[in-house]
Length: 287
Image (cartoon, rainbow, N blue to C red; front, side, top):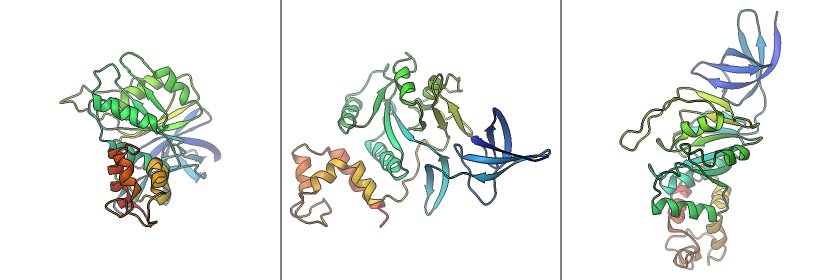
């Protein structure tokens, strides 16, 4: 006897996935002609011998991983990207700005998590926190070791589905565990670098809150895909605003005559690292 049910993909493997439907989980083979990712809302056909995905519902958002001209679906129906940062290892600001453009292109709301606040924080790390706070990005200061800031972050994730990104060693697994109440296996840091421990993409429920976290081992960092002009304007809004005063509309904001962006850097209206990120990321603009 066949039965059609609606469910959500909560775990993904190479050729199969786990679907939660009516408080039960079903192991399903992934469709050959359609990409499926954790977060997808699907219809499954429950049969006596096996269970198959018969339909994938329209997605509110989709996050892709680019490799050259090819792209692969990483997660579906996200609302937010959480960029996790730590004083050690410290990410370059280009990493932050790149993920801000990726989030904007995927129509996701980014926020920052300054993790491991129990450790001694470098001045550069403090300067980074102050810089992005002034750009009106939501941010949280957390310490899994001292359980600091976890409740505030949980409350923010109410009615949201997020994916955390961050360099190896910033505490992504520990933070996910603190938010979900699940003891994710972690390994000891070696040479100030973390060891990645997860093997599949999975969806976790935030503890005591109606929110979710999609954890994927492929998202320490990803290659920058095509970027739209609108994303550049949105992410680098302080540069966009100052550029309106440039003498020429086609100003490249380098050594162009009458460029107000360069003047804005000199006057402290634009941070040098943000300008450097801007120049790097405009190279990927998809005309």
